[in-house]
Amino acid sequence: MTLTKWTAAEVAKKVINNEELFILDVRNADAFADWKIEGHQFEYLNIPYFELLDGVEEILSDIPTDQPLLVVCAKEGSSVMIAEMLTEAGRDAGYLEGGMKSWSEHLEPIKVSNLTNGGELYQFVRLGKGCLSYMVISNGEAAIVDATRMTDVFINFAASKQAKITHIFDTHLHADHISGGRQIAAQTGATYYLPPKDAEEVVFDYAPLVVGTEVKIGNTTIAIQAIYSPGHTIGSTSFIVDNHYLLTGDILFIDSIGRPDLAGLAQDWVRDLRETLYNRYRELSNELIVLPAHFMIIDELNANGTVSKPLGDLFAENHGLNIEDEETFRSMVTDNLPPQPNAYQEIRQVNMGKITPTGEEQTEMEIGPNRCAVR
Amino acid sequence: MSLKADVMLDAKGLACPMPIVKTKKAMNGLTEGQILEVLATDKGSKADLAAWSKSVGHQYIGTTEDGDVMKHYIRKCSNDAVVEKQYDQIVQLDELAVKALEGGIILDVREEAEYAFGHIEGAKSIPMGELETRMEEIPKDQVIYVVCQTGRRSDLVAQKLASSGFGSVFNVIPGMTEWNGEVKTSL
Image (cartoon, rainbow over all chains, first blue to last red; front, side, top):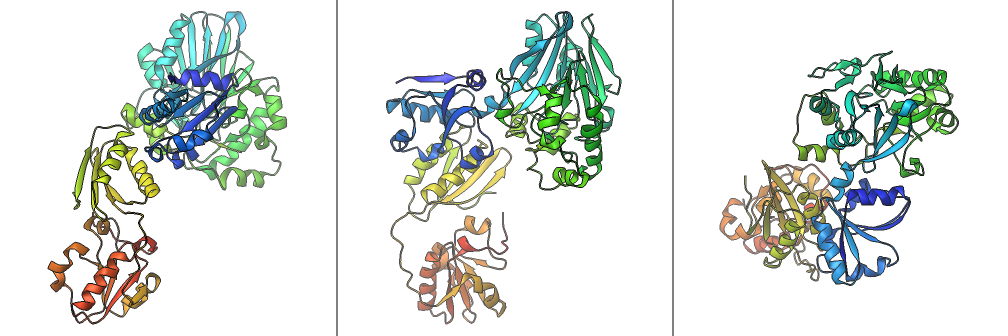
């Protein structure tokens, strides 16, 4: 039977196209419980590879024959071994090239919409980690918001669109993933913007991202307008793109809201978070399409794979926007919070430029789900 | 530092799944109770070796790190029929702390590596295999509480001590595997 190598991009297509897949995850039970490849129509079996060293016969009856079979492990090696054993036992089996490491790093660029005067807006969906980045392209120029550290993907994508990257923004100092903003700026000569209130400890030069910061991409009128929206961090900033899209960073998600504790000041920032969600955002048009910096669960993906929803819908449906009592709200966002993201303090240090881990260390730091939200 | 092991396996530079595959093979060459030291650089090997050991019934003792190199210690256990304990003077583990306050010596007869990764404060370490040659280190005028991992080795040692003229010897059961109190390490 056939042994097939799958790339993370091929698995991503299965997620986005809502297709069936049977995943045999041969990592430790703990690792599987912590995070896995999520798909609308995926089924799973978790048996650690080291329990299959004597053969796979015992699990054959648990693996359906009417769906494609993908064996997944942390890096690749174990999944190749088990997939080979399965093919020898008469099954077609695939393995994921690069394992969960490559899944965590895969970015899927999906077009959100056309913008005025021929501009385009793309969302880069990092399915394995739940991170969302954005690229605005217009007339040979590009701006990026909340770039992840897979910098080549952004640089190559802009090149494929014959666009020069001119502006790079981070909505806030990230704690769940390593920003690629500074590196892309260094490679392309673009200007890298950070909110100064989040950047007090950074050790590199940046352009201050402040209220009213407004840039034009290309020589057309695609405006990127900054709005101060603290709460997840004290400097958190939102953007309105082309008067139609609201990039909310880690303040407001589709089915949840930002958590205020990752920089250690939950109690202080609750009021800011409430002010942003219940007052500042209420003054904006309900027609704006919300584009967050994260998603938590696969159900937040639209049919085309993007993550977006009108602000008015979120005011009606998002639980975090519908808590009348301030004390109840305070309690929800400060008590019983989910576990913090893996290595979040070290990740903040990297994003401040204070430490420079190797590529492998960066991968280790980012392993696992992002956990930036409270529901 | 290196702890005493019976067999050493060098799995440095090998990526998953090879450290476990090699460990499994190497384990076949050990006899029950012997300790395997596995050198590895694959970061995932620690969690995987611990989980694998548990799944097949070996005792994962612990891991030390020396730069990029991890040293894993595993003791071979077989799942053969449980051996009846012979020695009838016993102390329950949860009574040990109270009993020991009245004096006496806690004698830990597990291997050096097992002791190093966690023992009761004040316990004296003499691995079972060294008992014959080091018996004079044990005072005859004190109560001896013999402890090991599960109560099997301590059962044998307690018998040996009692027949060698030690007057007050107790086997502590079940053993360190059930110990919930504080432990000291000597790594």
